Image (cartoon, rainbow, N blue to C red; front, side, top):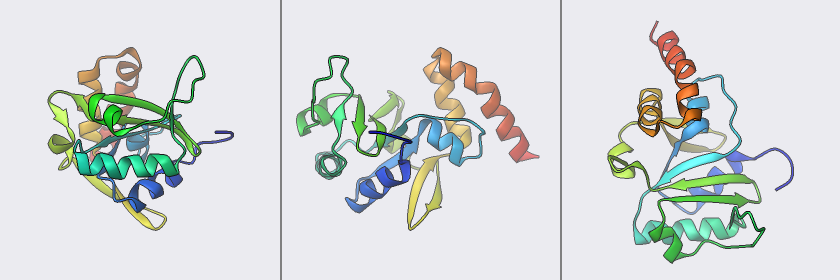
Length: 161
């Protein structure tokens, strides 16, 4: 991919293929009002054979390959989609990370009711609520997540006022 990521284009393809997904991560935080930048789109998808088939068709349309340090062109397939918890992909429209869980207690089924609907161009997508994003980043405990927490909490405080 050359140029700026086109996250809405990725979301359109996923929606066109009826993939069950939730936007999580940095794009979810931006949609919730946090003044941050992000360089990839993170989605959590329902882990089921039917949804994996839809997802695979969408990924094929997006010309998705795994990010590989050795520059190999490794394409996703049904076996990989059903086996791995995290998929870091490059697509024709930008970087895309697929997750089946944030941690064992936070799967698609656990989080689907912790979302807000957003209208983006001609589609409606579901994205994690800011409170849930904060909770997920607290659980992750990675340095980059911990560094973002004060900004996310302040955004939530301002929205509550």
